[in-house]
Amino acid sequence: MARHEVDLLVIGSGAGALTAAFTAADAGANVLVVEKSARYGGTSATSGGGIWIPGSADARAKGHADDPEEALGYIKALIGDDVPEAKLKTYVASANRMLSYLEERSDVRYIAYAYSDYHMDVAGARDGWRTHDPIPLMADQLGEDFWKMEPPHILTLTLGRFTWTMEEAKLLLTMSPGAKSLLFKLMLKYVFDLPWRFKTKRARRLTGGNALIGRLKLSLDRKGVPIWLNSPMAELITEKGRITGAVVERDGRRIEIHARKGVVLATGGFDHSEALRRKYLPQPTSADWSAGVPSNTGDGLEAGLKAGAATGLMDSAWWGPGFLLEGEDRARILFVERALPSSIIVNQAGRRYMNEAASYHVAGGEMHRCNRPEAPTVPSWFVFDARYRGKYMLGPMMAGKPSADARLPENMRKILKKAGNLAGLAAQIGVDPAVFAGEVARFNSHAAKGEDPDFGRGASAYDRHYGDASVSPNPTLAPIAEAPFYAIPIYPCDLGTNGGLQTDDDGQVLDTQGRPLGGLYAVGNVSAAAMGRTYPGAGATLGPAMTFGWLAARHAMRVND
Image 1 (cartoon, one colour):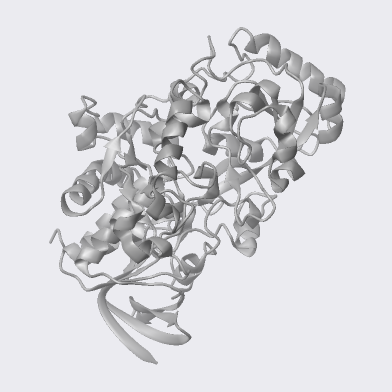
Image 2 (image 1 turned 30 degrees about the horizontal axis):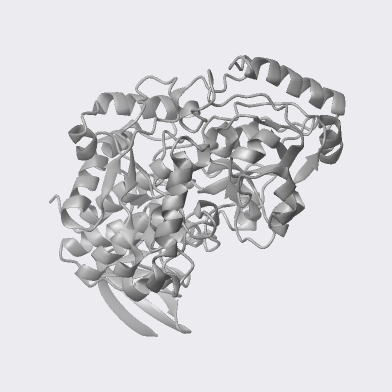
């Protein structure tokens, strides 16, 4: 068997992985990144790319200094005893240092954004400036590596061509003032970028996860760190009770890669493994319901278990209501659409059961929590009217008149239910027409006054963030009253699982006795989430992945010794 030797071996190529790789290389290490799929970047590349970082330098510079104790109290109140307080303290103390380090030493660039935390009713929550958005990157800076990076999730592409920054997304999805001119500007830039349009239909400007991963890739290039694609891990190598490397399959050959300083597992969750989902996640479940990349099949988790690792939070995922379209290899999460006026979610009994404008994680969790034999929520129905249809986007369905429905993509038409009245829609979605009509009537009577006494929709700053500012007094509420009426089936989908290998404050994998497994680290969704079963704010997945990737690499390289 061929043999290769490095200081640090990183398995996976998402944000946590590449942060660890850069940090170690910057400390002088010989680093190798191996990725099982044909593209680098993982789910991180397909995501919005945001990171949740309390107390960043940019937030302070903008006059929004953060109190670390408030940030700690906020996440501690949400997470409870699922994660040791010491680990939460490590995150709050280290996240802003990680970001400052990357911005000083690498190509990574972020700006703090006025995006409220997801649980504004919890003490310590803030109405903005903890979430950070990556600064866009021009694709041609990556050269040929642009074609090797995971593309954005299709739900983030307008007309299959443009992605958006967080601020632009809010404008476009809520059709706030300036949305039409922004869309025209993006289209104009694309149309006149003739050299680039001959290469690809995607716009040259990369935002979100593609901007983040692209910037990390440029940083690794400057350090001479290679990424081996199509190189899945076969097994970890153990010598005298210590993890010393891994066997990787590359170009049909098995290669022993020995790592002098350590191995970082960053292989993503198990969201696309039917067997592992059936074993661990709430039922019903399906790998079709994941928005993560299809290569997330639990390889790192299973390798860690064989090495004797402890696990935690195995029943948890980053939930989100979503829908499925034929011909697509992953789910589409309803991040924003649920908060827009003239829409509701009902169960199979025809009744509402949640605040539709709550965070996607909370809303997805409610689909599981409220699932009952007498009123199943899997699937539920996302219901809206012609007013909604005419103003907002929903997946591949651009805003337009009902007369344009015949021109919708076929896969969208297959799931879309439509009727001239509520009774007809009730028949199509299989709910009691009287119950459904009564539920809509109750909703409408309160929505006209901007109220939701049943679930408090629109009461928090987070709810209103993605509401329609032109609608008052509550930007998330308006009656469902204009025919025709529509519905699509939605499921408790996920952005990835977040249960996995237990780790300590340095990202070291722990065994079942709580002791570090020497030489083995885990970051991102292969590890038990630092945020437990909660989602404090936008970027609460990538923020910890990058922070603990940074800490793991520093520990492996003995930076603090």
